Length: 145
Ligand SMILES: Cc1cc2nc3c(=O)[nH]c(=O)nc-3n(C[C@H](O)[C@H](O)[C@H](O)COP(=O)(O)O)c2cc1C
Image 1: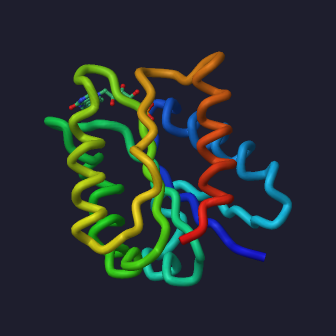
Image 2: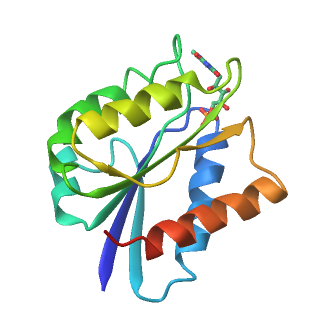
């Protein structure tokens, strides 16, 4: 059985709601085991122990990752992302998603095998957005390189 690790930051709960929907989508794939944790609850080196990685972080600062918790985690774990399937997601509010485009480019430069475009959601995920997130999780769980 393959193992997916999902690590996310969520200050207000929107990215956490996204994480929950993605996890529900992955659960439809019985061959996939998923562990879902908030950043700070896992050492960055544990990323090395998983087959696929899902990272979630809302837009923060000036179209940046959240700086206090998630940015240090990403910096510390990025060496383990090389040649590994990675999917990104996060909520935003003020901009149009530039933080995610920057993050996608960064992941590729760090050697990750980026799955699809990062999944972004304005504010809280609801309705069809939840369905889309579940589908994103299912498709990532089936993604083979
Ligand atoms: C300090 C701060 C900075 C933010 N900066 C941005 C930003 O640069 N671009 C953007 O689109 N949204 C920005 N937002 C909005 C958040 O990304 C948005 O509220 C998101 O839904 C928060 O997700 P969360 O509930 O998972 O924390 C910012 C919010 C805060 C509190």
